Image (cartoon, rainbow, N blue to C red; front, side, top):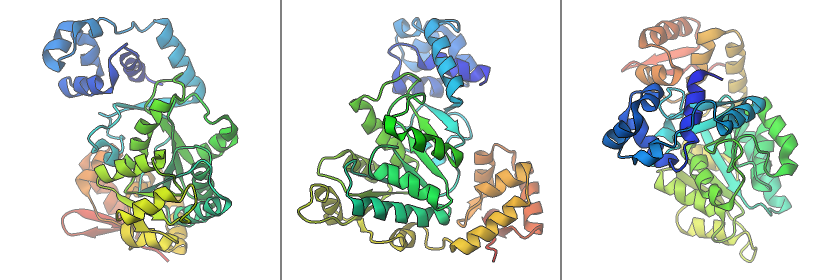
Length: 364
């Protein structure tokens, strides 16, 4: 971990600061060094933060900072602030994005679907979730869920079975395995995915943290699929966040008298897309998503690349992306991106479109 990450950690551990004040500081100062060097008066004048809060900024050698730092290092985690170009663009654009994300692994680029549902799911619900996520993952749709019992677990497991990528979002510190029985799933997930949290290390999985976790799950994705959810459940909260964020909501119909059928059936009454198979999701969000065999050909092409060429190719999709957007999400300069895209185009992996937009060339 870097010195800059240690500085962000100090700031995040400032008592009473909170996410909204963190965001105000990010908006008011150019970088973390300016924030830490500004002092209480500048915090008050430029960000409207009371001097008493600024005075609470812990020193770098404070015991709580050292302990949190050690927990992050032990977990293999790193810190991603909102100001970083690697921060997911979809999440950045919601009205209340996390100021910081703690991450183990690498946040996957590309299209993503959130899958949530009952912790007390039926065998039918678990099997359907597993099969759906396996098929979508085989088409390189990233599966995002909350690593909870029930539907969440089977969403992650299905994505792994499909050979795809899956991302788990926690409602506790990144150093905590919750629920404890999912310890093996945590390890498996990190082999082909990542785990993230907005909470500092050591934060317990308190009930009040999970609604905040849910807004991140939906914020990272273009749509949310709900499988088996009771009325007033956390899964419905995620669906509400999705609607507020302009995402598509999907639901698998449930038995009328089932305890976990009421929530999903209400979503369908309210206009959610009905889902009985992966095609119902693909037709709405990714109608041009290639067949799995085309994806395998793309992966074979990717295996021939390395370095920045491979990294940039991973960011490309079957939806046109402007060269400036590719520069932002890759961290490269527009000139570097242009040169790499020309190289990839000559190799037959990229197709250029009018308006300096680019897509992956479908291979078979």
